[in-house]
Amino acid sequence: MDPLFVVVVIAAAVSALCWIASLVTKDTSWVDRAWSVVPVVYVWVFAASALADGDDAGRLVLMAALVTAWGARLTFNFARKGGYSGVEDYRWAILRGRMSPALFQVFNLLFIVLYQMTLLVLITLPAEWARTHPAPLTAADALIAALFVGFLIGETVADQQQWDFHQAKARGSADGFLTTGLFAYSRHPNFFFEQAQWWAFYAFGATAAVASGAGVWGGVINPTIVGAILLTLLFVGSTVFTESISAAKYPAYAQYQRTTSMLVPLPRRRDGARVS
Image (cartoon, rainbow, N blue to C red; front, side, top):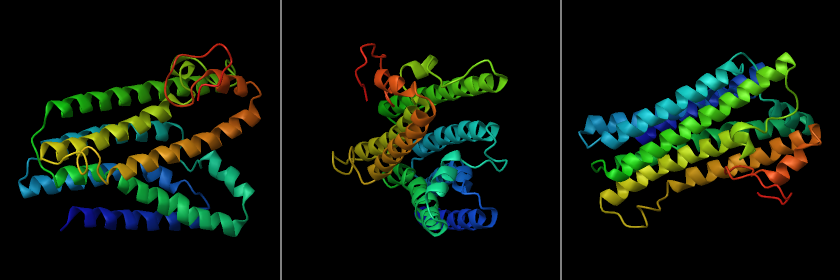
């Protein structure tokens, strides 16, 4: 059976389950709970197909192993924040309060469920591109893998710093918002590293196509770039919305925005000029 068809069927089933569960429980975070799991399944479907076909599957197995590490880390971080214990993302509650019940349900179906679940398929399609352009591993793959691991470590460190800060706030030994560690160089370093991992993932598919004889178009730049682009746009939009909440809650946040990069880690500006 075609692996892409299998992935689409799984995505459709998970989407239906998330939507029905959101209606029954009145909790719209079901896609969030699937976010770190289904991409791992999808990439292993592509890798398993390459192995079954007897193709050179080294790159696919490497991609699947890296995405598994990504999923395990994200699942752990989400679980310790109560994500699997019925805790809904606070941003959905805010949006629900700003919309009529009917409009929010339209938003729930079209964006929270269908758009995001489609996006989770799209970001894994570089694995399908690598499967259909089989080629031996190259030095470029080793470099991309090292970058992926580096980004994974960066996100792990950022999430741990954020976790430690919020634990300190809960104890009453800290207040406000985090501005130290990696957060001294980016207001959302975890968001940056998350996106960077999926751009590295895209690079694997591009490398496979180039190694199999494709040129710039279809190789370096190919249709699967859509997933990485849409993920970046989603994160930028989500970040802007999150920051509007933080700025309303903390008056000092505006100064933090003026001196610290929003996503890409950069040296902090001290002259008050906006950086990004």
